[in-house]
Structure formats: C-alpha cells, structure tokens
Image (cartoon, rainbow, N blue to C red; front, side, top):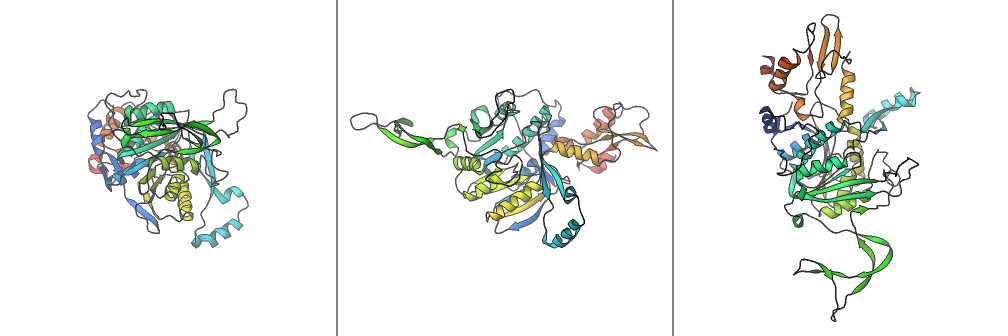
Length: 463
C-alpha cells in the first residue's frame, strides 16, 4: 500500500493542440471525481535499499515504475537536469533475452549440483521478456502521458529531455509532448540514421533511422544548457570563418582589416540534427551485453555532452542496459537509472561496478513485479488467476470469469496496470462496480472477484 501520494498537477500548456483519440486517465473524465485523483497525486511506496556500492552520493539504480520513482524523487526534493528515455516504441515487436540465474556465491555449489542433474538446456535458464512492444496505441499514449507528466515534475527549471522513438508512434508523441512541455519548448527533432544497418528487400524504402525529440523546461532557449558539438569531416574543406558579434548577438562572417571575407581550411563541422553515428544498431557488436535494443555509448555521449555539465544529474527512467548511467559516470555527471525489469537492474549494476562507479540500488515495494512492458505483466497476471477464462456473456469491464461448482459463474475484475488511477481501489470504483457493473450481469451471478493493487480505505469499502 502506498505510504502517501505526492501531489502534482499535470495540465496542458494553454493554447496547445491536444490528442483527442485517447482517454487520459489523469483528466478529461468530465466529473469532479477526477480532481480527487489529481489531488491524490503519484503513489509513494516504501523503498528498500538492496545494495550500496562505494560512496553512493546521489547516484541511484531504482527498480520500479517510472511514476513511483518520480514520486520518490519529488518527495526527496531531488531534481534532474537532463533526461534521456528510450521507452517501448509501440512497434508490435516482441524481444526476449535468455538470462541465467545469477551466481550468488552462497548458492554456487547448490546451483552447480542442480545443473549436473539437468539435461535440457532450457531448464537451466529462464526467459524474461524484457522489452515487448505489444501495445494498443491509445493505451500506449495514455501510459506515456502519465510517465512524461511525472518526469516533468522532477525536472529542474532549465532541464532538457530527449525522448527516443521511431516511426511507429513518433508523430503522435510529438503532439503529446507539445501538450505537456509546450510547443515553444520544442528544440529539435533529431534523426539518428544508422546507415550501416543492413536490410533485405522489404518492398519499400528501408527504415534505417530513429527520431529523438528534444524539449526544454527553460522559459527561453538561451537559458537551457547546450554545448555545440563538432565532428570530423571525411575530407577537409575551405569555408568562410564565422565569429560571434556581441552587438548583433549572432554569428557573422569574419573579415580582415581590408574588409575582405576570411576563409579557413577545416576538417571539422558542427553537428546538425541528422546523426550518422558509425555504430550498428542495436549496439551488440562493440559493446556486447546481449541486451535487446541496446543503444551505443557514442549516442549517449553526444546527448550528455551537449546538454549537461559536469556534476549535473542525468536520469533515464527506462534504463535498459544502463548505457545512460554508464556514460554519465564516465563524463563526470551524477546519474539515476530506473527500470522495472530485474534484468535491467542487474545488467546496469554489473556495468557500473565494472566502471568503478559508486551508487545505491533501491527497490520500490509496490507489491507488483513488472516486466519492462506492463502489457506483458497484465498477460502474466491473467495466467496466474486459477480458472480464469474469457467469457462473452459478461461486459468488457470484467477481465473474464471463473467457473465455480458452488457459486457458478464468477466475473473477475483485474486493475489495468497502464492506468494509474485504476490500481487504487477507491469508493468511486466500488460504487461503479455496485451501481453499474453488477446490475448488467446475468441474474444467475451470485459472486464476483475483485483484484486490486492498492486500497484507499478498507473499512469504508467493506461497508
């Protein structure tokens, strides 16, 4: 059960266009009850410190959901200066990784003995679906709306955020981010062109790029942290020398004492919004971690170098293989790595230990162990409910039914893990069950089953 709720008030930027093809669980329900959910805020759960490496300071690895992690940071008064997130792309893909039981020294002998008795390789390991893009578009947008509003609540006043997406959902997310951060706070649409990715004949132009949207919280672009990046040219070129004019506050052509334009030979160029970082995608060749969708360190080095200074806090709330935290540490920044997947936390932990970083490992005790994608967790929960089966005779409000020899058909309600408000069993939800869902059931239904994650007031709900 949540310790308390950390208030935050996500509202659209005034005058912004909004996406109306999906339902935001945080607002737009058309009732006053919604305001209670807004006042309740982000759920703050107990955090358990699992490990401390060196002298951690502010460096954190957090296992838990993005929203709960943001509740903790907000409650602690911690702010982040740069956010990079690489969330699921809603692509319909399903990635998996074969991971082996970690070799805890205390259990090494027992594990070794057990493995000698096993002949089937599949029995020696378990498979964690750590990144499954199996999304319904509207649910995905609603889920990202909640995550982005939570992230915004812990960003410093001049912080920047890079959101890494692809063609499946990027165009929708651009409108959504305009709504959350403001169109005037949009800085760049960066195209990462991984030109060395080989594709066969797909009866269309091959998709060889991702998009990264950059927004800032700063009131003016000049207030955001930005350091111009340069890269080597393939061949040196002759170009006009450009200098900064303090009076005009802009770059101008350099001129000599006779007023003639000054030229120079240069083997460097300023990085633009099309990035051709020479690294295979995913980054499994030069940086092998065996992690699906792993991004190359060179990509994060450019982002962190461009939008932060040493000592600033860099956060990744979909941390994956830990590349953001590892590069932030190497560049002298503080870091927060957050992910719901145990494999992500273990991979990042080992990567940072190898990099000689100091940090704490925390786990959010919310009672739910999630895969990276909540859709997969929902599927798993349904599998764990004994006897649950789909039934056309009941409304979609119910997840399915259980057939019982004594009570007959029992409809089952399961909270939607992609809807923060439905995880909490409240008076409003109980009234909806009693006054709307129950009367629509067949007359022979004698009992229903209600699952919940968190509860508002057990005594009042029982009444």
